[in-house]
Length: 221
View 1 (cartoon, rainbow, N blue to C red):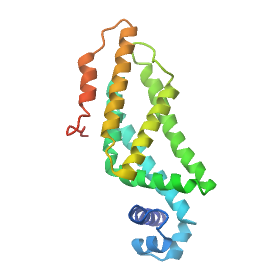
View 2 (view 1 turned 60 degrees about the vertical axis):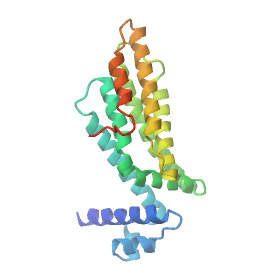
View 3 (view 1 turned 120 degrees about the horizontal axis):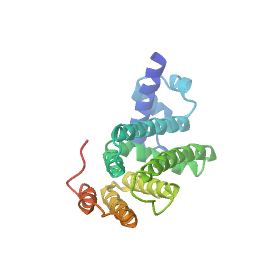
View 4 (view 1 turned 45 degrees about the horizontal axis):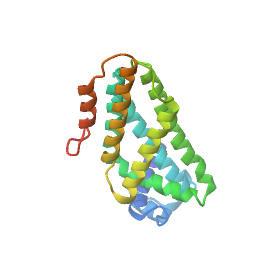
């Protein structure tokens, strides 16, 4: 337990320093000072700054996935599950700033350090898999077949979330407009699926999905 707590303390300190100073400017000495421990003790747990960055992102990514699973738990309706997932994407701005700042640092560092390319691919592949599984499962509960394969929807969704997140980290611009436009596209596709199955699209419900993400009306947990 003491070992785990020490690792958590170091990761917390590293998050604060790297977000404040930027990955390139942050040093192990600064992280040690932030954590109130010796630099040699950090090296006992993490061999270098790059490993620290990867572990930080792994931790934040796991927290995000856990939050998504909590929001989806007990929800069977595919449209309700989609809205819940988009709510998580909006709410992640709270923990999202550190995550996306660190992800931007990792992607930038991987251009000159090929050893960091594997962690980048692993993080992206994880979301491609999770989203692809969710889309495939939800598609089976819609009145008709989807317009595109689940893996294509997963690629589009992952690209959207990562793109908006990196824009947030680089410029501070909200992800909400992009998410709202994406919700409108999915609502339109869902309505078309109902029509193709010979059913009346639930237009009021689909419109409510879009309106839920209007400025000043952010979803609340």
